[in-house]
Image (tube, rainbow, N blue to C red; front, top):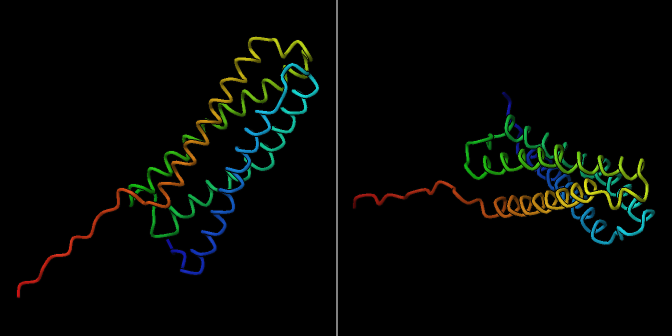
Length: 171
């Protein structure tokens, strides 16, 4: 396969950083909203969840999908590969896990709670299923934030790199 050149790599990095900012910013924004929702008031809880879903559907999702596509582009069309460098492989695996948590835990529980709010109105706020969904979702979002921060650290430090050993030439 043809590899991307130096100029293409710069653009790919710009796109990658932009998409990660969307993804991470959306997640952190949903936490901020969630922490300020008064769950004793139905209208506030409903609007809060509605806004979190809007952020998830229009910011987090596009950032996540775009980041995944850029990751595949790096893996297939650059010399980085997927597992050529251990730190890149760790980032890729963590991002896949994080995306699975986002789709099958965070989104699923968020949509389930929104449905409860729409069907049960004020009663949803005291429904044990709603409360449990909300708590599990929050912990899953915190997990996503921690994983993203760890991925940032790996990206900058590039640990587990193979060290180049310089041998002394005989004099």
